[in-house]
Amino acid sequence: MLTITKIKYAICISCFLAAFFTANSISASEKYDTSEDSLASYDVPQWYSEGKLGFFMHLGVFSVPAYKNEWYPTNMYYTADNPNMQRHPEYASSFVEHHTTTYGDRKSFGYKDFIPQLTLDKFDADYYAELIANTGATYFAAPAIHHDGFAMWDSKEIEWNAMKMGPKRDVVKELTDAMRKKGIKAGVSTHYGRHWKYYNFRPQFDTWDPANEGLYGKRRGDTEPPRPEDALKWERVMNELIDSYQPDYIFVDGGVCDARTEYNKDYFSDALRRVTAKFYNTSVELDKTVALSWKRDALNPGEAIYDTEKTIEGGIQKRPWQAHFTVNGSWGYAGDKPAFATDSILRGFIDIVSRNGNLLLNIGPKPDGTLDKNQERALIEIGQWMQVNGDAIHKSTPWKIYGEGTLNGLRAGGAKNWHYDKSAIRYTEKDGDLYAWFVDWPANGKVTLPQTAQFNAKKIELINAPSALTFTTKDNAIIVNLPQNKSGQFVWGLRLSK
Image (tube, one colour):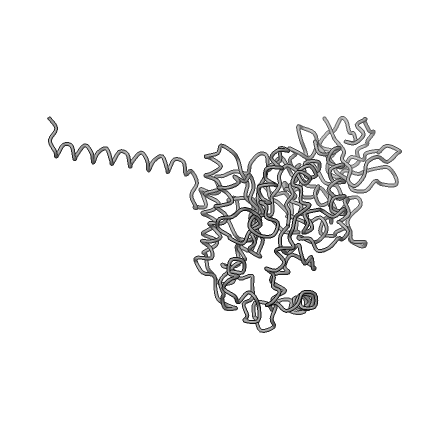
């Protein structure tokens, strides 16, 4: 017969066991924590390392004024007495002059007043999915939020968002759904880590009005450091994106480093580590692999994918990395302008791939949601090239050397006098074959491939015209005789087989 004491004891044991197993089940599901060893144990996904090419998009309220660049919302509030705005005073003052001349004073017409003009009435996510898919890209990051703090999704954390204001539509959801229908890994591009210091607060600006805190943030002094709540808000926003859209890829802009760099505050750094751990743990729960890229010193090497802006890593990196560039020199829409020459873009692309990197390429639509014809044409031409050469790009790996010669692409933007070596070569390999990429069809019809004699090639052919070519060996190089008639364009690939 059970006594009261035994019953109480049994209940206590049951509660203890329940708590024990619950705690263990939670810890088992949370495989990753914020330690360096833990985050670094998450490897780069196969789909990412094999894909090589991705796209992202800058689209927001800044697309409306379309003046110079996407930093319009901070530059339009420039004042000479703010020490944080002294880096490029003449440049910033041009924004002020443009704004006041075109729209009026900054209190009666502030940045928020552009929101109704972000109509996106012609925005078609399926068009972008088709365009991106035809480039041969394997992943895409939707424009979730920029420094300005206007969310492009149906956010619960940010009241000022595109579902409630402006276009009245969830841009992130539309693009995510459309990309996944095309088999493209869908992600989000985030720049919210700099929002806490992005606006200048003065009584003569609409930023001063507490009614506008939902967009500009709470009023702060010019040199006031970040608050813990700033980082916690950033963390909640990132977690909302993870929970709402289960992104395959997250782009984290380098602004998340500003708090540490400028004020020695680790609020955002710590928050990023928590977000990264959550992202990785969520991927385990969903049985999927995900990728997160970081800039500057936001994370430690190996914890995610290191990303560079408009620069290319030297040598061959052991771990896959990423460089992001823009198609036409502007991140957000700043008026119709020529796109970079496609040969320049592809020179940069093959240079990055030869060094074990991925290219993330940006486009910037208009405030009505359409893409100007120059950007569209660049993507179409990239796609045409990838139709011929993509199979040799996807799933390729670096060779023992990346190549020889200088290939200045992308950042040059097709500049008339930008130097690159016409004899430059880049190497990749795949399935036992060596690929040699050259960027100029030589007048004498001969391409020299340095340091390849030891490969002992038995057959060499052009990827775009697969028939055996004659070749000779001299010193440590192979000299290939090209067909008499030039075929293909931009960048050419040779397949060397044993």
